[in-house]
Amino acid sequence: MNSQEHLGAMRSVTLTELDAAQLHDREESKVILHREDVVDAMRSLKADYFILEHEGSRTQRYRNDYFDSIDLTNYHEHHNQKGQRHKLRYRTYVDSSITYFEIKQNVHGRTVKVRRRSSLPERRLLPKDAVFFFKQTGVAPSRLIPSLRVDYERILLVKQDFSERVTIDVNLSFSSAQGEVEIPDLAICEFKQPKFDRSSPAMIAMNRRPQNFSKYCMGLASCDPSLRRNRFKKVFRNLAALDATPTTRKLVAA
Image 1: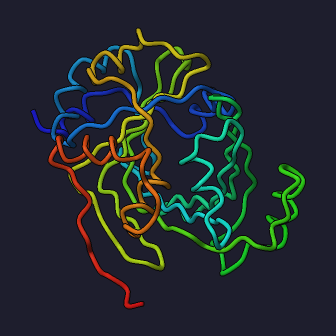
Image 2: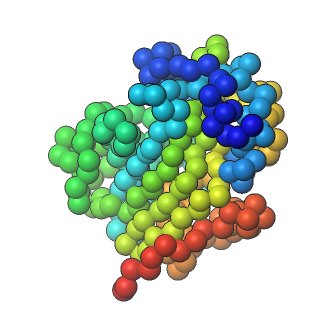
């Protein structure tokens, strides 16, 4: 049975029904796999999870446009494991042409996300989004510029009691001012739970130890090898062990 047959075997849920499991205040944990391993992992999940189906498709295309200061404050705060930090992005659901401006705040290991409906970003934060950002964080938005674009495809599962979301991201590509890379063989599986639960059927099926992994930090570090990355070396080693290392698409001339 191939991956599409696995997806088709699961009962579907709509976007409206999915609102019952928003989980904007949650604990997040991630595991990484080779994308071919996801097929085997999903064999046992149809009894416990629904899959999101939107406009006849069970995979959705996403685009994240991240903003940071010119010296990449958010990147370095994550690298240095600052206890309270935030990340801001425009998330576009490509297939439905819907964009949200989102602020993810990490408060000592717990993720809180707030967002507002918006439109595709420009070279600076859109005015209403800048005001929203300042009200939420107290940080002046004037120094924020585009830092990274991430494109990927997502499979979204929700536990049948709506207590957990599981996202599986594949076909990742990253683009910054320093270059473009892709990791087509990587699958990032993220578990969004009210409280970390290792007994999650999906976590058991993935059969990997949770680890720190940030698409934003990994994308920037892959596009720009000159960035400090000491704390991310283990992640790069894990990617190599999975035979899923970043591949350069295009280098931008300095």
